[in-house]
Amino acid sequence: MSVHNALFVNPADLPVETRAIDGNTVVNWWTLLENNNDTGVVMGIAEIPVDAHRPSRGHLHPQAETYVILSGVAEVHINDEPPRVMNANEVVHIPGGTEHIALNGSSTEPLRLLYIFSGIRNFDEVEYEFPPGA
Image (cartoon, rainbow, N blue to C red):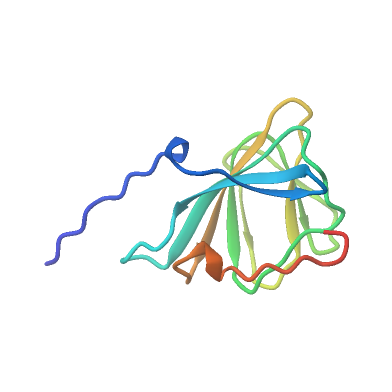
């Protein structure tokens, strides 16, 4: 039996990555897990600030993605369906190729969610597509 070491990660020790439109933040994120030799999982924490820019469209990618709401209120848009309000500890699994976006549904608290991709080893493998207006 081979021995594997546990991997401990603290987001405070990681660089923050940001997506902005015209200088206005849409989302900040920290990639917690990737390039792990024994998993095909990429996972991280995304934070949508209270005053974040609200794109009119979402994004899509061939990979399926799961969101676990950690804190705050999420306004989740899937394709052209009416938005769904989600709270802490709720989960949504989004099939690959589905347009989606999570927006902050609170005027007082950032939205924090855990995102999970399975079947890939590196965040760079996620092939993002942004429709016009996204």
